[in-house]
Each structure stands twice: as structure tokens, then as C-alpha cells.
Image 1: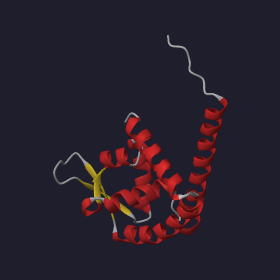
Image 2: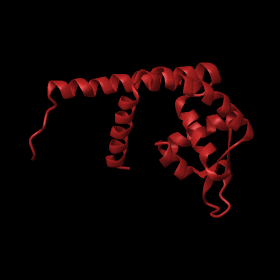
Image 3: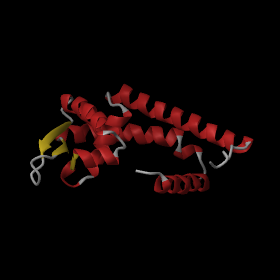
Length: 151
């Protein structure tokens, strides 16, 4: 068995800064979306993914993968969005066993309004705090992490 490669003090500090900063950023984004639009961050992410899909529709399995949700978690989240009239679930026309999530017109309207406030929060607590060079480094670093992480 390989020996554990412990983090040195600087690495531990950076790791904890990442954990603290990313948790706080997520909480701020979630709080602001809930207060202004009655949407939690996972709900907002689903609306965004559907808005970017052809015909504003995706298979539930594909949506779960894109939004990093388990299928059961996605199903619960979509149920909440359906109850609000923002999403509909429909049988897949190509495969009668599959279910698609579809972004309704009301869902698109809510997303358009929520996106304005969301980008303001992202700017205030992330983008505008960093220099362009720092933002580029963060972007490259997390692209590398995402590419290396298992599905």
C-alpha cells in the first residue's frame, strides 16, 4: 500500500480556502435566488440546462448527468419545478420508455428574470473580486479538475 502524501501547510491552507470560499459562494447564490425568485440553486441549474438544449428539452437521464444530480434527486427537483409550472415531463417520442424534461414558457420567463439577479451575484462575489489574470487561472484550474474527475 502506498504511503499517504499529506498536504503541507500551504497546500492545506489553499484547500481549506477553496472549501470555505466555494461553500460561502454557493450559499450566497442559493440565498439570493430563493429570496428573489423562489428558486434553489439546483432548480436554477436545471432551468439553465433546459434553456440551452434544442427545443428546451432533455432526457431526464441526460439532464441528471449534466446537472450532476442522481436520477432520484433530479426527479424530486423536477417535481418541485412542475408544481411551479416551470417544467413539464413528457414521454420521449423516439423511445416510449424515456422521459424528457421540457422548459415551459413560464419557466423561461422565470429564468430570464432570475438570470439577471444571478449574474449580479456571481459578479459581486466572484468575477469582480478577481483580476482578469486570476479569473483565467481559476478557469483553467477548474477545467483541468473537471476533465480529470471521474464521471
